[in-house]
Image: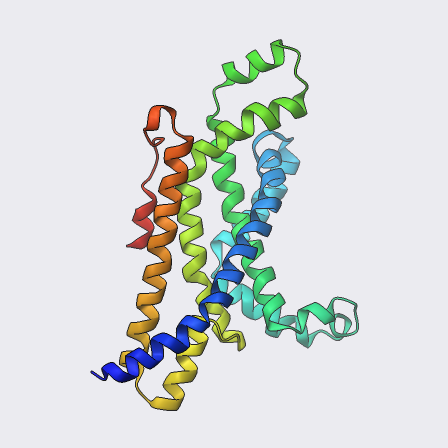
Length: 238
């Protein structure tokens, strides 16, 4: 094992962590913003609208994110109308294609996670808030969603961890995040063993930090300092 090469790889790959974290943070933020209204539609809207949201989440949750990325980046470029449209400025850029794919995928998973949380909110709490004269929008914003988010947090934590690891797929469309930079170093040094050990250690470190952060948020939101019941976030590390 070449320790000198591993130290060099640590320095080089650490510089690409910024892109990995940027993709992760922006994808999760965009996905969450899209998922919140979709989750309410999925949980409480008329069956026709709920089924439309279900169709979206079913497709994105049921197909590999790599396939989605290839369809968006390589597939749409084959369509003449797309290349001549105003969207081509974005769709020809690998960063924006990766970000759009990751965001839509995260939104689909987060929608179902929040939907389960919304459906788990006790009806008596909602009825009590309505009896106090609160409007439906205020009940949703002040009562329903905060409770649902706390219920959904452990499962959403798994989505956060999955997205950190999922950003490695961006390397397939030429982006030099951690995995992309590792692949480039391997092509230059022909030493995949040492370099991918370092890459794996970087992802493991990011995952452990995310687990601790999510556990801290769970603790802060819990009643009496006891974490809310639900699947352990750390299970996603396995």
